[in-house]
Length: 250
Image (cartoon, rainbow, N blue to C red; front, side, top):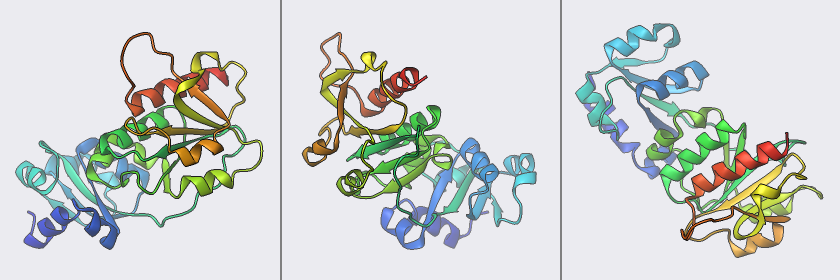
């Protein structure tokens, strides 16, 4: 059963200020928490149903566990329905991001404000084997509960960094290609000669890539339109481009 202090902490971590102050964040739902346990990520505490605790007893180690009802789990988190598990995890130390390794793609995100979009972008990166993502400082926070939920566990496998993109792109070694997604550019369907590895830079649907980053883009690319839609959601566009990048570099 949840104590008042436990409930107070869980609810406080729905707010960015408290998350940053405590260096803690919440992971909700049976599947994401099971993946969290299997990953070895450092934890603060676990709040589990009896059935979930019994099914995953081999992964619980010595983490503090509180058994809860489904009603308590739902009241403590942000999900409408959560009958299985909730975890408080520790934030890792922040690190800077080095340049892409030979053959590696890094996803760069400029001003992605919607948490659902960022979480989905992490799933897309995970699906296409992109292990590192760099975000502009004004991109939504990784540990927002909606980002964690939308990532469906991919935040465990994709390393996310926040730093000024202009500085990072400027510091890339000569010859490192930076593909920027624009409404006008080279068709992603014609990238057969593309060398493997580099940076894929994506801007928000509302604002696109910031003008000050344009000088760092070595190749402007676009997804050809065959209808009248004004634009694509950034996560959808990223998936289409990543698929073409993987096919063109194989």
